[in-house]
Length: 61
Image (tube, rainbow, N blue to C red; front, top):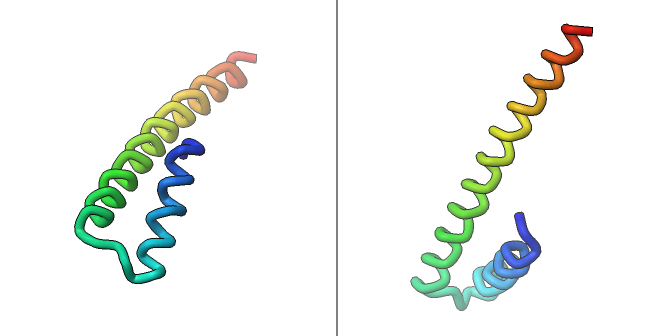
């Protein structure tokens, strides 16, 4: 999660806690969470590839 995404998430969270979030904020939150999840999935795929590659190197030693 980027610093910008975290800041937006905190802002939206405050609006929801105050009970003043409306349909626009719901859509913004949905979009933000989808973006965060997509980034996390890409990070997971990358780290899985690196782990597999690292194990392959250990086996050849």
